[in-house]
Image (cartoon, rainbow, N blue to C red; front, side, top):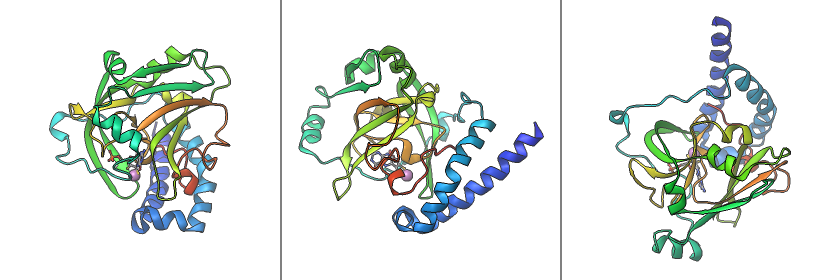
Length: 255
Ligand SMILES: Nc1nc2c(c(=O)[nH]1)N[C@H]1C(S)=C(S)[C@@H](COP(=O)(O)O)O[C@H]1N2
Ligand SMILES: [Mo]
């Protein structure tokens, strides 16, 4: 399929251009730059359409070998939620932490960390790519999000899964993310609780964080406290589907 490959290469070249701008200006400068924000807005729908057309919905991200695992997986963004509630739960190794699924589901459910750990798990060695210009290879273990979706039975009108996180920025805006319900069923989309064979530490998102391996780093929500299924992203946070998306980043951050 030479034509597809060519198209994909051109697409990746265009994406690399945007990533280059992001890397050279840094996330913070980028979010304040109005022209970049507008450019991202224009390319967004196009990017999702083109990428979904070129890549089958269930295509897997590349998986690596044990020997490829990075010696250091740098933490990025918030590295501690810092709330008294989170601190209290962390001190008790999250034994009384729970995550629930609410919103447009037939059977809302809540699980403890022990219950999640008792479910069938998947382990995958993948490369994490951050728009700030670094990447790292890590081994993630967790519950496939699709398994949890089967348990809660999404209603027909549900289109997105929203991840509510424990951390906020300096102005009190909470970190949150969202993905298409379709991508929740991708086999490499996990609620991960182990990194490189040990329980997630606080900098990397304890007790669970999202892994969504065909998307960029900022989609991988850490400190997940609750999931919500919705028909529209309007009315959540700034309405663009995620903390960084509200600052102008693309919602569909496919790689
Ligand atoms: N809750 C929360 N999730 C988050 C972030 C954050 O600041 N808060 N940063 C994102 C970004 S930009 C990246 S690159 C990854 C970093 O994951 P790591 O700290 O495990 O390297 O987490 C993402 N998920
Ligand atoms: Mo990132």
